[in-house]
Structure formats: structure tokens, C-alpha cells
Length: 480
Image 1 (cartoon, helix red, strand yellow):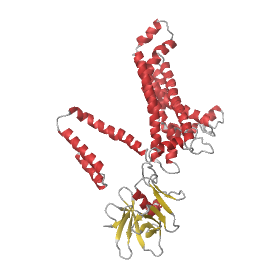
Image 2 (cartoon, one colour; image 1 turned 135 degrees about the vertical axis):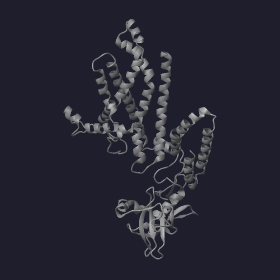
Image 3 (tube, helix red, strand yellow; image 1 turned 60 degrees about the vertical axis):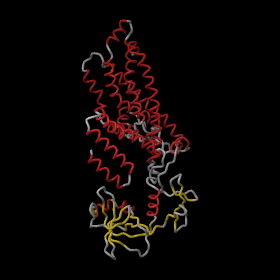
Image 4 (spheres, helix red, strand yellow; image 1 turned 135 degrees about the horizontal axis):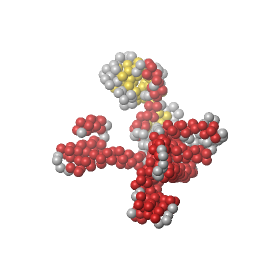
């Protein structure tokens, strides 16, 4: 424990994360006190589980919630100082007659690029990375590895985009064996808090609310910084004309998909469980065959089903003698994904329903038979209510899973089919796949917006679950 704490303390101290270092020190001191004394026996068992709960459950939820109120994403990942450095470095151009350095491409232990350059005039060897240029202290320096021609060529695009910031501008590569120090065309003016282009004369002023430099004509520089944007990500999903209509339509289909998938698999699984409850030959074989879809890897089966629904060579059209474009229209695509979910999900419901039926005392059904009730009446009056009491928590968890079933959609239809005028939202998109496309699509990653939609989804599932559990408690009181 102490060794792990010491190992973690050094990077925290180096990065000046004093709050994290303080939490680490306090946690380590508390654990050492707890496990080096003979007191607090219950806490010795409860504390590890509580710490894991905080690390793997509470912290991710809180971090997601805090991210939802920021503009965190591509172009808005670091601080304002980082954004200024990136803007200036990206605008570097080569000055005629500037010094050309000998270059070797090196990497750190984590694979990060660096430039190992030699000044032809002095022979001085320097190492440069995103933090700047400094004396190398070796050829190569300790902890660095020189890339050969093949390795460097494989990362040529990354090398071309890489730059080492300097006081005059930045050092960039000119091929894989030469580098030059250029001058930044765009420079930051602290007095006016703006970026000025020395060639065009254009000025971008800092907009602290948006975390970006904005010109008078509304143009934004791509590189910004992370700021708190309040409820902007939430209101965007509900008020942005390009998003709100699709968002609500997708929400309706999301409820249909989750409800139909959960209800359909439950009904089919329950039907098979009831059919195999009595005495019959080869019951064990039938149960094995029914459970086979559950035993297969779901992601592989989703890809297989996608091929089965293929219009030209899919098995379904070939067997039925039809030519249906299953993924070409909204209704057929929605029917197809629901059918796939039914096939994948009913074995689980079959298993849990079989167990629940076996737990129902036989005296109850015998009593209904004595009272003159038929099999259907006995099932409706006794078995079904008891099944629902026992299985409602599983049905709620299944609904929550299907509400966020990313693989079921993305591996079969990828959210399509898409209207010709709206390539961002398809007929089978769930909120999770629609959010994925919005947040990580062509405009770059938007983690703040994705986190906001995640909170929407969490609230929806939480409300549905709370209502369902309340009704379950009412049923338990009736049948207890």
C-alpha cells in the first residue's frame, strides 16, 4: 500500500496536483491506521468496497456530470495558455535563409514524438517536444528511442503536424532528416487579449464565455480552451432547430425499441418456459437448443444477422423468395432490429422465468384447480402476478440495458436508413447512437455535449425505474 502511494505521489507532485496529492496522503494515512491496528474490525471489510465504489461508480458519474457543464472536446481540451501556444505554433512559416538542423525522430517510452536536432554551426544536440527545446544529454537521450526510416514513414503525417515551440516560433520538420525554425504568423497580444495575424492583419479577440478567439465577422479559431458553459449543452439538445426535432423523434423510437425488446423477449421466453414446465421427453435437449442464442457472442451474431437481412444475397430473402430491402426503409429496418433483439434476448428471459416458475409453490396451483379454475385462469390469477413480482427488477434492468443498447443498432443498421436531407439521424437511431454521431462525428469530439445527453438518458431511465419499482412494491404488498 505504501509503495503504491509513493509511486502515485511523484507524478502528482510533478504535475503540481496538490489537491490530488493531499487526498492520496490522507487516504494512505487512514488505511495504514485502519489495517495496522486491531480495532475497527467491521471497517476493515467495508472500507475496500466503499473505496472501489467511489473510484469505479461515484467518481465517473460525478466527472461525467461536471463535464456536461463545459465545452470540453476537440479544440477545447486544455487551458487558455495551451490554446495560445497551439495557435502560434500552428501558424509557423519558414523564414528564407533560416538555419536548417539535422533531425532524428525519437519517441518516449509512452510513444510520444520528439525531435532530436543538431545545430550545424555549433554541433549542439537538443531534444524538443511539446514542452519546448532543451539540451539532449545523450544521443539518444536516456528514455528515448530513435525511429528508423520505416517507423518514421509510418508516422509521417503525425511528424508533419508536430512542432516544438520556441521563443521565435517553432521548429518543424522538413522531411525526416531535416528541420527548421520558423516564425509564427499569428501572435498573442496580452494587452488586448487577442490573436493578430501579421500577414492579413485580422484580429481574433478572446471570448471567455465560449472559450475561443473570435473575429469581428464571427470566425472562430479552431483551437480554444475549456470553460464552464452552464446549461448550454442541455438547452442545445432541446432548442437547437437542427437537433431538437430529431432528438424528440429519436426519443420516441428509443422507448418503442426498449419496451418492445424487453416485453417481446419476456413473452417469448415465458411461453417457452411454461411449455417446458411439464413432463415431456427430451426436455433437456429442447432447453439446450433454446439457450443457444444466449451462448453465442452477441456482437458476432449481430453481424451475422446483418448479412442475413442483405437484400441481394441474404438468407432471409432467398428462403422466402422475396426481394425486400430490409434496411432501406424505416419500418422494415425497425422491424428487423426488433426481430434480432427478440432472437438474442428471449433465452435469458426463458432461463429466469424457468427458475421463477420452479420457485412457485405447487400448493397454490393445486388450490386453484380445486376451486375449479382452468389452466389459463390459474396462470392469470396466480402464476403471472407472482412472476411479475419476482422478475420486475430484471425487466427494469433489461429495459435500461436496451434503452442504451448501442451494439444492437450500430452493428446492424448503424442507425440507418437516413433521409436524403439529414445524414445525422436515421430511422433506427437510439439516443445513444445519435449522440455518438453528434458528439464524435465530422466536427470532432464534443465530450461536454455527449455528457449532457448521457445525463438526459440517465434521468429518463431513473424515472422509469423508480415508477416501476414503486408499482412492484404495491404488487408485493398485495401478494405477500
